[in-house]
Image 1 (cartoon, rainbow, N blue to C red):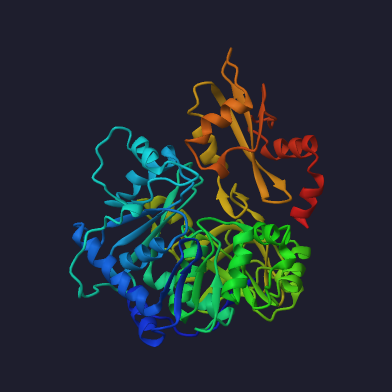
Image 2: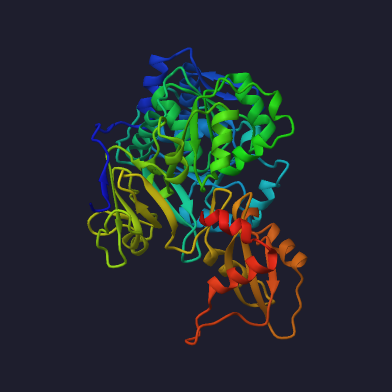
Length: 532
């Protein structure tokens, strides 16, 4: 058998996010929709629909029009959800901005996306966002409306505006790190996102009786698609435990709200299991959820099933370019399947595994995983060449991930064709960090690799060659990075070197850098876990 699979044809929604919200408010008016525990806010579906109407009118009152890009730069909060849904209803394009971004990254996204407004909090315990925004502008006068959420200064507008959207309209831009060193804006439509959310929700058997606890960030597809839109399409309640992940607050939210589904990357589940007061929390309401973003160690999965009562926890695999989920385990799959594979192809979706020459390989043979169908992005914003490299002429999205399709159709991710590091669920491309570090006046050359990490899955390491006569300490470099790039991109291991291991033809041997660091740092055990 060839490594090709097509999920069942179940029929696709040709609707919009705004219309689905209206339907949810009609069908489940008084049921809980959004519960933001750290803000002490609880909205029913009819409350949510009403507030979204107000925000939609406010966006129009700002002078924004259908097709305009609107940025949201915030950790998890009710306002994030309100803006996501209001932009969708108003025909505008939400631009997700990672709250870990600092001036270097933010300045790039502001200009690249051509956003006309940005919503943000002035500051929080992590950063002074207002100051970072001004630094990102770099003295340039940007045509950018700033709406500070704590001031509640979104102007009032007229209600009763008719929605003017189609399912194929772009509704969201999410930035994913690029192999060319700069993030790319992934263009996603109502049709992409609603259907993917609905199909993933069906794998978990979610209904209006369910309560989803989502400590994952809303700026990721995991949060804003698997969280917000899965709730919109099913009527499930969505619980936000905190601004950002906190193991104790997540456990408390599960217990207090009687959550039935829990989301997270493996490190989040590990942190909850290792919480010093884990045993005092009543988690018996849990049934299902999603673990994604990195491979799950089998012992962790066993504990999630047994000690967290998530007997139907699922594993999902995908990427931003595919809206995001491509394959997913069934809630009743054997534990072995859920640990050793990333499940089978979702409905209305095609997958295949291809060789370097593009031929579909036999089952059991490694190759690059490709997918085709409604879930494939419209492309990269303003980058037709990059889009053409990612999506071939037959419509197949090339994920860059190496995989094997088993005889039973379940897929196993075996590696990455692209030079990608996944640190605690965050995608990090070495090229992006290298090009940033090259801007340091003392650095002549740099090579970035990923190293195995027992807690995060992988971490970032950098070998740096300085310019002649220069000196630079690890601490100085980290401090220089701190306010310029996201914390998860700052190298955890930094080594100043005189040269790099090279091939006879002069190419840097990154695999040797990785091997040397694994030996020096004593990471052999973590490396074995990674490749198991």
